Image (cartoon, rainbow, N blue to C red):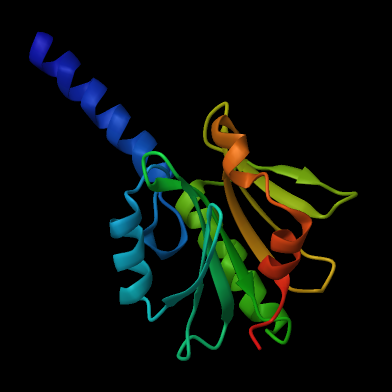
Length: 166
């Protein structure tokens, strides 16, 4: 009985962690080295570091303009990430991203009609949001509010997240 109960608890924990793994195979709490390796495997290179942000670009990926990792500086692990898609992507390509997020994170979402965002809630602090920036780019934003200070960036850094690579 104890073995069965322990097995069920381990399975529940594993399922919870899998739900918190997102785009590019990155997970909340990943060590920066692991996340950097995953980005490299996907063809992205870190080209800019500012404060708690590490910004990645790819010469090969024609759908994603950039990926920004938000890193908890003391432990050097991922507290969240932001994927910026090209504005020129088609509606079908954007829909593919949404469908993929539903397959990864489930169908239970909160839809903000006014802001036109779709949000998945993993737990009390971790979310992922799908929506469009004011620039017209599709964005997917993984966020852990437990580490809000990691996401508290100066306005200049926030602008650079959504600027195109020159």
